[in-house]
Length: 393
Image (tube, rainbow, N blue to C red; front, side):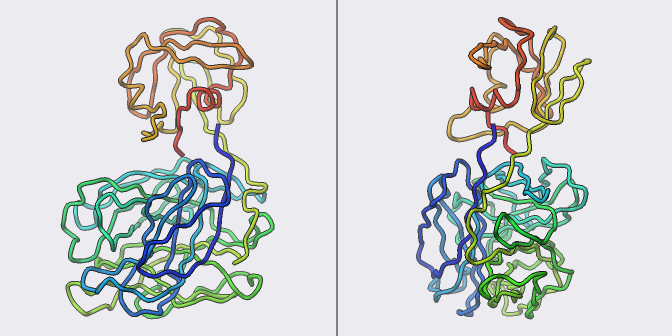
């Protein structure tokens, strides 16, 4: 069963010293996005998130390697969201999740992240590093070539480390949301993408609506890779009607900072956003039962009667590794063919004796069902709730 949706929007002042933000909401798998909204200090810097837990996260400003590392106070905007596939009350679809990578720009190209939701058009995508596994301070994500099905991404340090190996994998958070303007519960918000016009000079993102109190919380990222020099999206201040942004290159290798035009994606919220979880509903993970079993695209009762050895239960969503010890696809691969999973439905135990068949796409071949073969089971829901299989969206 997916977790209940929660979200937190905030804006704080910060410098190079690490700060801790404690959540007031209850999260299971929070994902954090942060944006350096001002340019009070001229040195190249990024808002660096790390140590994300269910109760808090840490962040600070990290300067490029050729700077002194001491940065003046800036405004950092952030949003925290519970991972999952979700829908707003107005029908807007979005998904939030994480993935692990050590892919670096200019190293061997970009990796591809496939979305779990079938978007009708390319969504607005933001990415943000969640960890500090390589002890690289000035470190950020770059993305490109977003379609309705996928986005390409990579990690990017400053120019001094462009071709260095990033040995350890970092966890990266992402949100993919339909482009829209309206309300998120009682809060005004919008999700958008700029034209291919953002460069090293100031570009003003003019909002589609006026935000309460004359202030807004803007979180953005570069959405293209038109210029190969290491760069990040940075702000130059905001109001209730707009946010000024620009592309900031580091000057590790040279002092030239002229950058070609790029696209940027962004989310905007009221500064006093509250109750963002109200009315947001989970989108069920779909399953397919092949060999005559038909297709189920939403949660519901699935009667697995006459389930034979040759039939295959296919999970469309990848069961991903979870360091907390929950059962994952990697665990299933290593189980003996006699291994058993117990699924409880209304107090009735249904035992699934299984062996793992073809692994591509997370296909699991079941050897048979015992005890109550005709018991209606909300299969994926019960698996997630009872044996803590994490189906990562």
